[in-house]
Length: 317
Image (cartoon, rainbow, N blue to C red; front, side):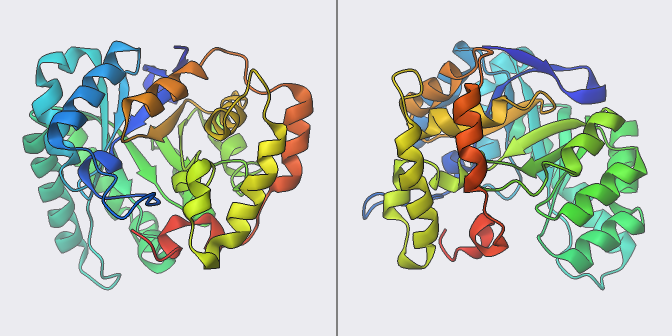
């Protein structure tokens, strides 16, 4: 496993970090009639195995079902080996009062501390709502920043970050200059942050955490199970199979090496519901990235339709 600096936090985090939404919820593209979600015992084994093979950064959220509870129970005796990043809930109504929004956010942080069985969260992030009116109000009025800074001064959290799908929000966050990290989507298909957000984060020394590197499974063999209205994604994924080689043998390897080829990102979140998927992801962290010819070949696969790029708009769990 290779490690990178998480921006101004100074933390050295594993290039591959573990996303845990699939442990706490029935999430992702279904490959069969039943759930893909592992049992609690399977989830615990997966968490331990991930740490054993070098992953030291775990991503979760208050909204991820039982994920925080599973992490707290499984890894409370290995707390010194990991950095935990979670996300707090906030008010859904953009017209709500600032004190009420802040009260709910603070309560969410306190509940996360309890579920994670820890006295301090390494990184607390705002869980973006994909709602421009709400998110821009949270940023412009300083509601989000002030609330998390209060939690930081109280010793509940070490660093603060923001997770959003909206480039206008992430650029506004970066302009404030007071956020430690930014979590954004970036993958072979979704390049919206490549020319603006990522370079701006580099200039401000803001740690960049990448999610959706596999686009909720659309950049894996699970793309074959996508519903008909997402057929354009499946067709593009099929084309990518023509780039596979002996060294880059699977679609996840191709997708993860693409993201790791960017030196300005700190870590790539990989959600996994099986230990084999974790092992495959970790194997891509070898400092090699993508060969130049493959890098050039994937440039034409960029998609600009936000309805295809945002899994929240797909209409599937």
